[in-house]
Image (cartoon, rainbow, N blue to C red):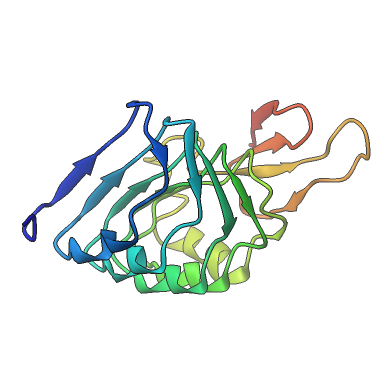
Length: 173
């Protein structure tokens, strides 16, 4: 049993399938990384939201799908959330604003649409938009594309925006 496991890094291993449904049994987990395993599919299992000690969640560059659950707000210790370059859909839940320690958020090159919730943008006064952080601390598909001249995701508080069609990005001033 791995009940005291703090970090689980499974990135760049050519894994297939999805995140195991029983991931929530790792109650002490603080950092979970499964990025760049391009054949990982499926949704984020509900049990992942039982990992209330989680500070870092890296799932970018996979083929995960489905929407981001409102249960994301249960991860109140979360500092880093990278979901970019996946097939996620739906909107960014307002409950993400409950993650008061969030410092770094990447959702670009997904199919997450709508607009950045006020609750998430309110984190700008706390941690998310600290001048000490990387210039791309909140990155989304909020750049007007060259075809429709409309942004896929509306964001008044993003630090970097991408064109949903061309995947070209730029840092905002």
